[in-house]
Length: 207
Image (cartoon, rainbow, N blue to C red; front, side, top):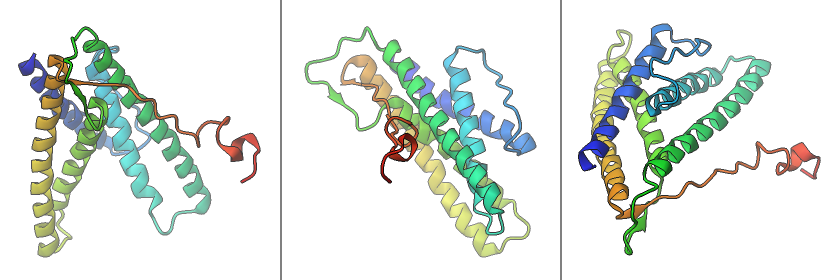
């Protein structure tokens, strides 16, 4: 089980890198996703998760244009809000996968719970794939100063080490859950501002 869990964490990086590279073939937030993995598999979900992150990364770039039309900016903000909800829903879907995967594990009496679930750690790993891709792109710029390139190269080194550390930590967490040394729970985010029953602006309450 240990080898499989560690392999899973490493395979996630391959999937995230593939999705990130595929997105940048067209580098357009409206490009339809073409998921290479079979529907219903965890690989399919992980690829789709990173694709959402890639699109949102570029939406966040676009909305920071100081010359953007306010009407367009509002539409983009609403799109980013929807993307954030989709991202959260997908993280919870991945955690449900782990909960089912480890459902038959006997939890040890002294088992502890982690500060974050496996899926939220994988969320960070997905964002790291995007940070690494874009930091590497900065090194290829011909219009940037030598100082800029040097700063970005130093940052890239840190990001790459961070990915090694996080991948290792995720593998260890999955190993611990598989062995019963840790246990996990799936907490739904229950975002109140997206719910017309809990956001007072939406249900007509006092602002």
